[in-house]
Image (cartoon, rainbow over all chains, first blue to last red; front, side, top):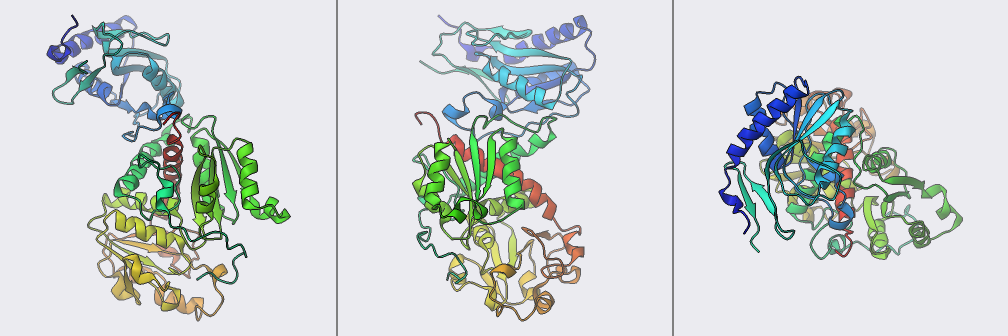
Length: 170
Length: 336
């Protein structure tokens, strides 16, 4: 029997993630990191983390639609939003935030996009949910929740208020 | 309608099929004209262009979305600005792009348009950006290309110049936010202007409150009443209460000679000066598709003044062309 994800308290998880990010930053002696959220669910999580951590640099947002690896198969996502990265990426410590880590392809695209803005000193990945089944050699540094889901199952974050995890029913 | 100066080939039928440019799912497959498209499609083009506009903030001003695609600019008629922005747009999408000036190449040796297309397809071209002095040329090519190839009309005769119209719509939206309260006046050589036709269709589709054309009778097409515009013969009444002014270039190269008494007189009657700008709303936006004949269509003071967005139009042209290229190429999905 799999977990009923809708009953999960997302805000409580983000609270714990904020603490984890804080100790990660301290451990790695990172000062004044630049947080970037991935549209759309990742940005909602990033907004909360950014506020809880009281980061001074404004939050960045990226939409990876132009960097996807499946354009020739599915075409362009027409809901694409502009990416906004305030200031420089060059020499920054980036905290990249997404809602669900699955195959790793979104994060691959996000890293490529970030590097087109400049060469960061480091990138830390924080995700609300790690559902496994990676197809690329990537891992998250901060994980809110690990879920073991069957491959047919999809999980997504709905929001922005309240933030609720949902799965498709099948 | 066609002037005697146009090339002899009459095989390009008057374009009718706006359905040609959409696939079964109603997505853009070619971009040939704004006429007959839905508000949703035009809005989607502008929304996607908005996302592309931030690519120029990147250190590497490129996105990989059309990597490995080959885009061929086929310019049967000269144009520097349009060809340059199409090239730049293709490069920012990471496509490989070549520009052929057909007027000085194979066509001069007698090769037909279709033979040119077949040869380029054999070189694995994925998209043709076509400019031609004959109305319907891009439609003709779109009807004959392989299924995976997209065609973008970069101006055909007096018929359409849809990417120019869309960059103008995008510029208007960025300044005024929306269309339903806007009164827009298009001034000048409506007769020869494919830009004006595409703009008028786009403005009406997007729900502009009123579209006006202001021109001397000799520079109006005979079917002007069917375009959904109000016609004014003088600048003062035509500009009254207007939010956006779109000036058109006097296409002297297409005029026989008898159409205008003189450029000086044209400027007196229809040229835009700072003084005449006062007839319109104080926050009126002034546009021109370029190249400007300063002192004929408008004063330098207006072209370079605070109401002018002429250079923004050029910048926005790159994002709009990136959007149209990506949306039409995105149609070519494997198994889709």
